[in-house]
Image 1 (cartoon, helix red, strand yellow):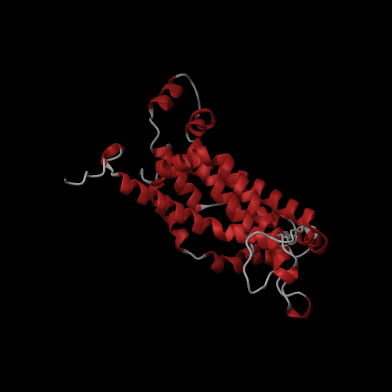
Image 2 (cartoon, rainbow, N blue to C red):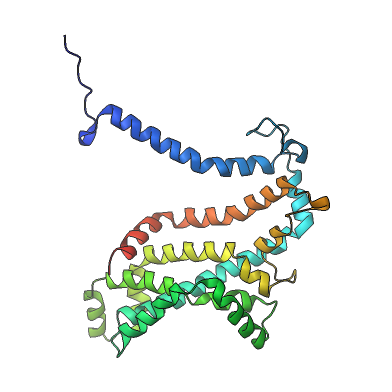
Length: 286
């Protein structure tokens, strides 16, 4: 008696194939989540249990001592607020400036538009570290050292953000725009009341990328914001590397990493329903 072949699941996929696919996806998710789980676990362990020979994912004993010591060591509230202020204001400014530039490059007709856009886009090939010294000299000349202006203003102009939003704007139908011109609307009204509402996925995508970049920035704040009043969280956390007798307190470092990851996670969760659609719509149209 011949064996019965496995019945195909929906879409022609066999049950075995579906089980294999789910198993592979579960493995990939576990590999991605494990470092974060280990980071959280380490932040909740006492120092003497961190380098034990037997790895322990679930802390025993569990303690929040590392978070308390972290708050005392680096003025956690102040540095967290500084990073959040820079990331929020910088993200809002970068999205607005990029959107205005993208509108000019995609919906307005003017001589040399495409040539200027190509030249502007070519600046993406310049490594960011090459620009640190010229920007530092400029900021110092303006008297912005150890100020929030030095942390926010240089990041407002993004060739990548302009390119991302331009691709999204080019995919929008011109019917609404032409109808608005007939009704007497000007360019600013069309930009603010038609283009931006129709481009929410792309705007959310850029906002997430911009927030992540500004929140995690280390090199530039290290140059221009060394005073505690304007010091950001990544710079403050770097001071935890190598404590007394060159012994790094890894539970405190991991506690700082947990605090640093949470705002990025919240930002992504708030924008996730637009994020995937924004990547697709602005990344493949042109």
